[in-house]
Length: 220
Length: 77
Image 1: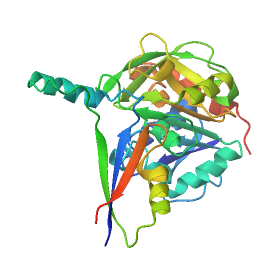
Image 2: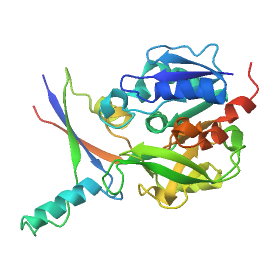
Image 3: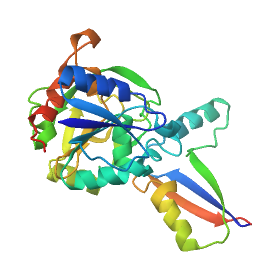
C-alpha cells in the first residue's frame, strides 16, 4: 500500500499526513505535486488540510481545478481509495467527487478543539473498521456542511453519511454531518483530522481506527 | 475591451452569518431600517468579446458554486 499525499500551494497538513502514514499507520507514502498528472504506483490518495491557494474564491475551489485532480477523478472512478481531511474535504466537494459544500461556521469563528464523532455507517472500505465513537481534532473556519434537501435525501438513502458530530454540532452543519462518502464508498471527506490523532503523544490514537482501512485493502 | 461584472451571492436558503453580524452592527449604529444583509462577491472580467453562453458557463463552472451560490452578471462597458 502506497499513499499519494497531494500538495497544493498553501497545503499545511501534508507533512503531518506523510509522517502519520509512514510512522504510525505503517504504510508507504510519498508527496505528489499538484501539477503532476500521474498516480502510477499509488494505491490511495490523501488530499491534505491547509489553505490551498490561500482559499481564493472559495475554500478548495482552485485546488479542485489543479491538473492532478482530473487524475484523481479517474483514480476514484476506478474504485481507488481517496480521503480528504479539512481543506481536503473542501477540495473533494469543489471537484465534484463528493456532494455538498462547506461554508463559514455558523458562529463565524475558527474552531480548534477535539470533537467526538459518531460513525453513521460501517459501509465501505473506509468505515468498515470504525465500530465506535472516536475523538479527533478539528481546526477550521469553514466547516459547516450544507447541501440541498434532495442531496441530503440521497445521502441518507445511499448510506453516504460517514460521521456526525456526537456531542455538539460545533459548526452548524446540516444534520451535524462531519464527513460524507461518495455513492461507492471509496471516497471519504471529513472536516476532522485523523492524521493528528495517531499517537498518544499528540493527544490520542483514534485516527488509527479510521486509517487502518489503508492496511485492510488489497493492493496491486 | 468589454467588462463583465459578475456578482455571486449565497443562496437565500443559506444562513449568511457574516451578513447577520453586519446587520447587527448597523442596528447598533441606529440604522434600524435595515432588516437583512447579504454579503457576496463582485468579480470583474475583462474579455475580448461578450459571449453570454460562455459567461454563464464560467459562472456555473468556477466563479460560483451552484450548491451554495447564485450568480448574475451584466456587461458594463
